[in-house]
Image (tube, rainbow, N blue to C red; front, side, top):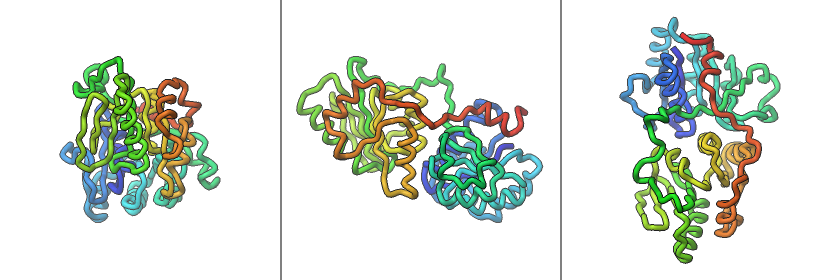
Length: 321
């Protein structure tokens, strides 16, 4: 069994664990369990392989019952998983920690002391990690969810936009972004005023109840499975979350990143810097610069983010069952 540990402090911590567990379980035939801590709700809790634990006592009991079956424990950071991860290390004897960002978060910095392996998403992050941990580092990449591309079309019918239109996507994540909202509203305003029939704007604003649609584009509060929207985009304006960057790189999309500044260690800025995509701000992303970037097909420079190769991870764990 591969045991993954994730907290629900944010989707940024939970979703990579869910993606990895889902892919290993349903596409690589590995017995995988996702242990979840925290009050947030993500994923399919009735799937049978996701277990929500309300106490360390319950988790300790689970670990002792499954001790002989667990091959490896992989923790995905956040304050919710610090003690569960340390407990797993104590009972199971092994702990791997996955770091999604270039600059490690506070929880992972603590867990690095207990980890047998530190799994990195980006190459070249050693300057942000103490040298004493270098022997533990392995670049495995960001875990995107694998899908059956032959039987699962990426785009839904609602996204079948005329092929003669160029699609620009603005997204600030599930909670939205004031900065990207200003950029998007200004661009959409110009598209409507100029009656530009060759451009279609998709603007994901956040969780608030927003619904607008016209021949120029549509605005939504929340768009599930955003990768389906990215797949049809000619240009994406987005934040600097590691998951977003990984999706864009895997799809080979043109993008401009507007990282959220002021977060812990300014990690979104460094994610964007290491991504290879250009970085923009609200004062630089005018209508003209965005429209110009739409026709620039060389937006991505050499990137340092890697996409997880699940076969490599399986070999790292110890091969196939």
